[in-house]
Length: 578
Image 1 (tube, rainbow, N blue to C red):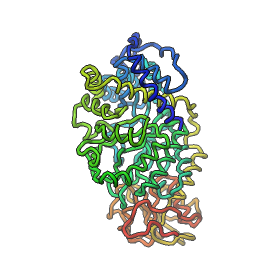
Image 2 (image 1 turned 135 degrees about the vertical axis):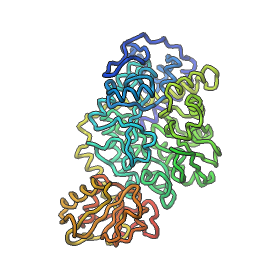
Image 3 (image 1 turned 180 degrees about the vertical axis):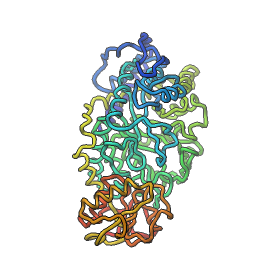
Image 4 (image 1 turned 60 degrees about the vertical axis):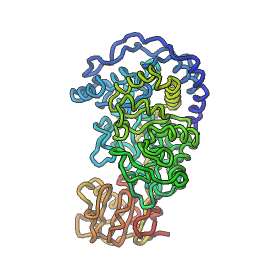
């Protein structure tokens, strides 16, 4: 709760900021950041951070700093773009060229310095990631590389007049949206947590995840997903959601928020006001939330309310048309939603961050106009503007012509700096915590509780005699991991001729099923199991190594499948095991 308490204090400090104004001195020139492809383009900056004389309280410190920032400093603090290159200061020629096209600089550190950025999102492109359309590059590889990158970014940020660490975010939801996979403790998808329905295990698992992200220098995780699905789990969110029960989801969201933030990483609950009852993808078009106001408040709002009450540092706005509140206007640009509902009804005092501004609904206007519209709606941080310079210039123009009040901008930056100083106050863990045995144990307990048998027996070994594991070609890593886990559990596995355990996962369809198998296992949202003809149906909701180890324990009869499907799957029971 420390994060939200500090943000609440920031609101008290804002009037003082407005009285003091923003007449800080211009920074003195200094050399640009050195790098393998560094050729200028960065703004003139002080050689070292100005002396910090502000109070140690994050909110008070933020207010005092905001009072002396220039308009250019304030405009930069609300921007959170991505950059090319796996190092802050050294990039190859291709990445330098890409950064030149994006921001007129060569390196990520230069981008921070030129635009006086408040944040940066780390990105990763994979073909089967549903968010890949807004992630054109990858700059995360492994924990050591990410920590080196974030250290360089934080160093560049601390040389800015705000003298603050950078807000470094990442979509580490786990499941199908996971940026860093190498060397970390892999949590299952959110739906696995919903199947387990054990908030204590959820909090422990996310506490482990938070410690690992903090060790890598990440300060914000754009997670958990607080969207509630329709009963059968349709739509684009799928296993990224905890499920279709708003009360269960609320408990899970609150637990995940607490776990992350106890480790020093701010949680960003998303996608407000709820993407679970939509069918369209907001990457491509403006999805409609068609429930009436009362139904929306009953079905979609509870997990967001729970996340706010748990102290979530951020709420991410969705590019979503909540017709019962502001018909035809994307929530990101709706003051009725982002201010009246989020701030007024939910009493949220933290940082409101937009979903990616390079998504289709946000590109309805030029970058500068979209930036001003999003800020005026009540957002504080603008994520992934498609044209960084135009977004910054639009904000400055808005201040000049009065379409954006300086009070609104200083309010946003005060919230951002308060959150930065709050997370900074928690000591950064050593990298040795990443992938530790203690974290694996925390997550293993959750995975074991999530495994769900929807058809078949529930006690003793589920199969006798040798088994063979099959899967579509794209699931080979999972297939091999299950083979190893089964062997470790004492099950005889042979290449062919045994009772078949068939694996399917995200994006697979009816053609990928094997009706001759003895067991079909779904490693994602379990809807496809309604079409499977095999005698035993199991959902793990995840293809992580730890999830498959838990599955092996159930198949071997060493553990009981205690999970319950968070969505309806055809005419199958939520669990076959009472």
